[in-house]
Length: 126
Image (cartoon, rainbow, N blue to C red; front, side):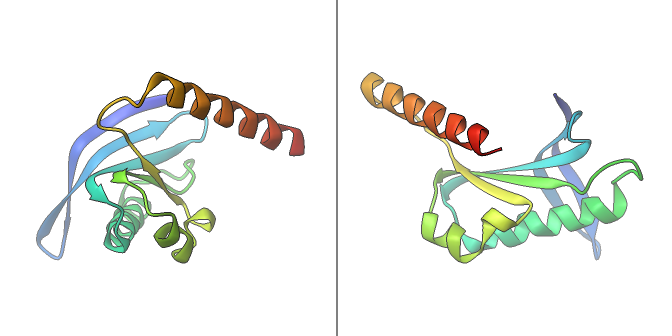
């Protein structure tokens, strides 16, 4: 359901330019999705930057029929404690870790099984 909107979308605030790494639109959610790509470990400043972009999009780009924009920060290393301290589980911004190379096949299978199990448990609770 994702539609590509822009790469390196430029926004201007107080005469200064900023660039959103990726901007997508999710058709079923009816909202813009900001994706910020980070090479290092998740930093609290990444949250502030993404929040800034979401507020700008909400004010200047969101259509009346759309929901508020959401954000995803993709980092090479996630910090669970930082995410917890920022209470990102209650925010419109999520943090995920990406891999720069594939893990061992057995580890990949284990993670896949864990994810499927978790998804089933969450689905049963609903």
